[in-house]
Image (cartoon, rainbow, N blue to C red; front, side, top):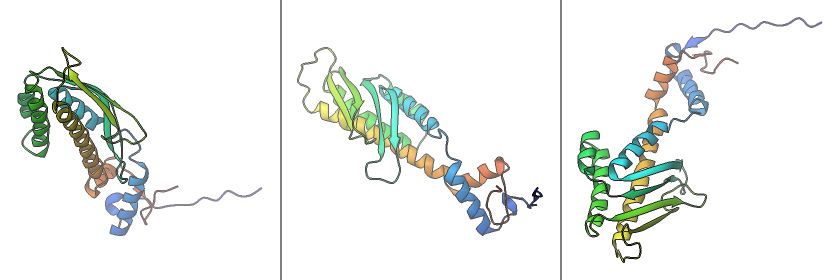
Length: 203
């Protein structure tokens, strides 16, 4: 009968590793420890921002972040929302996010003003690519669906697709942060992971 062998390993905390071993530990973390719904917080922000602009989002899909067909899109609807500018200013502090949302909101506002704030839109997606171009956006006058709304249709469609692209950029920024050395190191230390001397996880 074979005699079982016992192996002894010395385990190290992340801070005790060499620089090369730390990088090996980071690779392990990035390869498998982001396997959770890290995008949920971005979805919540997007839905909240959308509601302020009059955009009701049923669900969001995305793919990323390395291929030409990557992007984000959603199913939902849109109608004019009074007080949208005040809501955005109150919720999103000075910075790119506020400016981008104000720009999208202004585009929608200007299109609505030309049609007495009666435009509505329905957004659905199609095809296998998850970007804003693979969406069908039907825009009409709420009280007269057959009314000619001219260039207002294109303006609303463009603004809604820009909002989808904004969501994608937010997702990409969040992913880049989660994969950054700073965020990875913080998570490894907080979870008290231990490693072999070369930075590999113990079997």
